[in-house]
Amino acid sequence: MRILLGLNDESLAELLELYKIEFGPGAARYARKTYRKWRSGEVAPVTETFERFLLRLPKVMTFDLKCEVLRRLMDEFSAKDNHKLTVYTDDWEEKLPPLVEQIVIKANTSGLPREVERRLRWLAEDETQLAQEILRKSRIEQGRIAVSMLREEMAAIESVLAEKHLRPKVVHKLKFPCGTITLNIKRR
Amino acid sequence: MDDQKQELIPKKQSLFPITAEDIVDNALQNLDEKQAQRVTEKAADEIVRLAVEKRKAEYRAGAAQEEMRNLIDNANLLDERVGDYSIQSSFETASGTTNVEIRKSRTSAAMMALIVAAGVLIVLLVYLVLRG
Image (cartoon, rainbow over all chains, first blue to last red; front, side, top):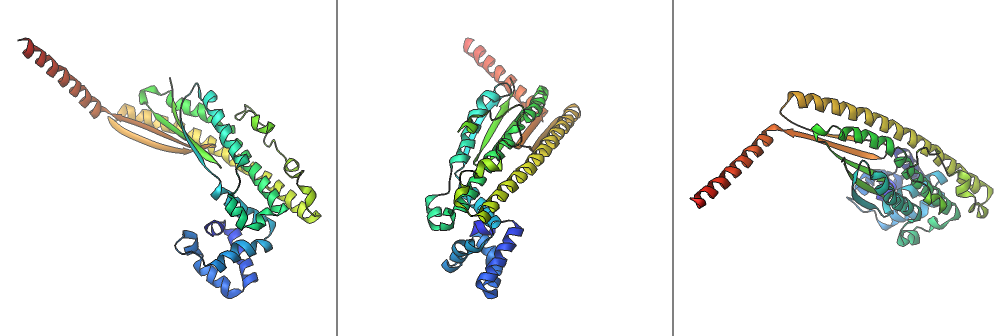
């Protein structure tokens, strides 16, 4: 539920409108009134509400909305790898790529937990399977975009570290959909 | 797997090595025409979204470089004029976040020098007492 209710405003409005159409204005009013508590985890929805939102509603969701729900599920459930590494400005290009590759490959291979797939049967539909594939490739590309400008970024960091009299300490955290790499960067 | 073996930090990289066609080609057979169109549109949307992400990342990278230059200028100014200072800055870049810490403490440097001098003096005194 927290995942569904963490959708962006536009998708959430669409979801609640759909809920109103499917289950009536009374149920929708209750959902609107309570969704902040569901979102924060303060109150757990009853089984009926859970089933309405996650099992029955997807059947009438637009494909776009389903994809957004799927994106949230993938963000929430994909395993995250967090690494720490000390690199020098003259050796990061050798040390970093294997780790980046590991994380990017993970984005390509990681799926949703079996239990989630078992309960949310709509995930098995052909259309949704394709959507998962699209989003998976998109996450890989997102990772590549992140590192595509790393050379320029490292050049800027090197110019900071070049000010030796200031003795700067630089830590750079690379963020990927499937994890992070924290680099402690030094200059020889 | 071939695309996974590509250089991950290439010097000049094509914006999108994968196309909507690559993604959907194999799985489209099971879908009816309407579904297939929806999926293809989603793939195209995702490519546009990534293009926007890329532009945003480029902007963040440029802004971060400019801010880092300013940080160094400010730190150099402080270094000339002030004895003790500490700067901690965080920059949102294309790939993540860079944290820079610059710290200078003349007081603690002087204190360290005093401690070292006192230590040397004690060792010397102990040596002289034991010898005498």
